Length: 572
Image (cartoon, rainbow, N blue to C red; front, side, top):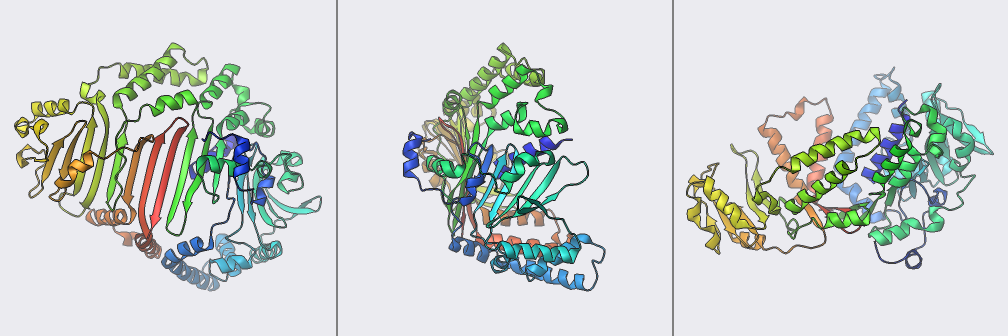
């Protein structure tokens, strides 16, 4: 079966959902002590983990619930309609409806904080998601184990689905497995937490006691305070952070003595037993170039939410990548529809990629399973050895700012600013003059103010559309729209951050939704074709989003430590 691939995929999804110069001792004394009791269950050498050290503040939870109130109201209407239909016998033979009705009864027909609290579930509870080997474990704090257990009992009674409880040393749990399935789903309501996991049935003697909290790890993330230390290093807040140890992931998948392989070896379609030693060594050497990924919240308030993701890269490689970033300013801040910037030395990037490909062709991988990488490297060398036009090698990046866009017009057109950053802009001007008759008459090289481009020189001719151009020392800029030519000079001269940012994007999320609606209308996309109720629900979502969404900004950076991705969303 393909179980091991599914487990790896789960870890990858978590990774996508999910340094400083101080030494560990100094950091340990400068960070707050661990406050998440669930981390006492997490082995210090876990393959992956994501947990919050502090609960989300009440005012933040209230703010987001208020924003989504229109959606919740529509949801409540649908729930009431479903309950009425169920009572009338319209879902008589539909088992899913039976379960849904039973759960809704426990929630009094409303999914809200108060009803969850009655079941012993709190929005303020701690949580932890981590691995035992590669097997996922989820722990969520609860306020009242008896209330939750009683609710589950009532649901089972109403549905007729009774899952027998098992017991280990006085602790009850449920195991859901069928036939010859090698793994089971394990659920337990403990004194202060709800625990869920998936692991092999044949590993119960090794893993079940730890899952039930009867065996605790000798060294845990609580005792090392590793997440708090990482948060301090990476700039994460206590509201959620974690990591995926890619090197340990490789060990679990490639070592025959790993916990994962020892339990699932016979069930794996492909494992380390099918690989030659050289393959294992070479795969691990590739992973060692980027041994860990981390993620964490950088901001969580009523009006903003920020996340940072980092791929830690081996120092030499990270330094070489950071050297590819050019001195081009990041996407412009402000109340614009869209702005973006790319800052990469194209010529140097080409040389770097060629150097990496040549290294593989000079010393190709011996592992047969990696032969495709050898072939790709050879093809890449052939492609990159083709001479490139000098003006392409001179490219340093580009910036764009879109101030307005009308998707409903006969010829959708935006207004804003665009700059192309190059080492020798006069080379680009000379090339344009060769292919566009009359372009040389603009004499851009000797102009200090933006020059209006005559309509007859433009490839796309639009009446009443003003386009201006300006050449700087290392940039060529164009403004589109009557109002924007006066901004062009300052836009071209914007100062770079010089912090390794090579790609940045900022956009107005609410206006983006409006444009999408305009495009749908222009192209005749009819929302009323959806099933009954779906249009009303999606419309409520759209209106809520438009009313609450502010801006979204993403920045990608290459530093001496690796690749950083910062995202920030603001709300009205």
